[in-house]
Image 1 (cartoon, rainbow, N blue to C red):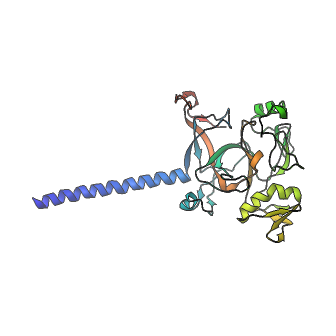
Image 2 (cartoon, rainbow, N blue to C red):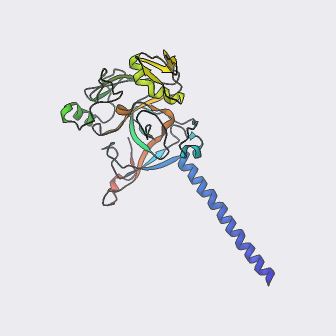
Image 3 (cartoon, helix red, strand yellow):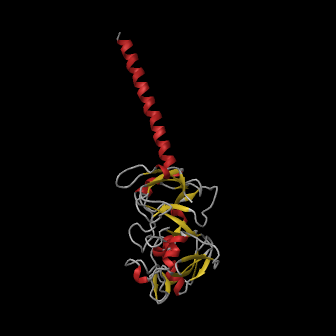
Length: 296
């Protein structure tokens, strides 16, 4: 009798261990899929209206541009991590809607990666592009025949005066009174690609100081129109990463590259694919017409 009881307890124990083992594999596998393959993000703000609205839940394809490989535990703890990216099946293109880590989670003076903070914006400019904003419209490589971003909102902005805009919206990166860039007259800004070499005169030092600091991992000094690496002047610089210019579709209400500058490639999470769920933010009512809507 005691032998039968021991056998029963042993069988129950084995079943419990098997359940725990396979459950752990499933949970771990799901976590890996969420980190490296796909993600779901709830949209809290209106900066991408009308394409994406508050209460939408967006499915993000992390394999499109290549899954990122890095030490997840160090990243969660806020440590600087070395990010490698597996080959994707496409590249980031103009007008793609992209999810990325907020490049300035703590201060606009320093680029960092915070695993819990994300933006979703439209990619306006890609590496190698020269971007301008002319009377509120994005212009890439001096081609005024092509349009980028939300044309309706840009058209409305073109008819809006500085005085009609909310306070703090008009002036933009690099926040320099001599250049005086703003949301209606911006640039030209060259968007660096990996391997590009630029001369660091005054304007380029202002435009690229933050991303050079991010690549080097420590702050630089801009003094007398010269960028200094400790006591050594930097007359030029070769970039080791690709960069992007991101913009919100609601051009009069979006914290984007017009205000904080260029986005490093390492911070890109993936391509926004479609809306898999949508709820009214206050009532919780499901918006059935938005479910499975492709994001373009």
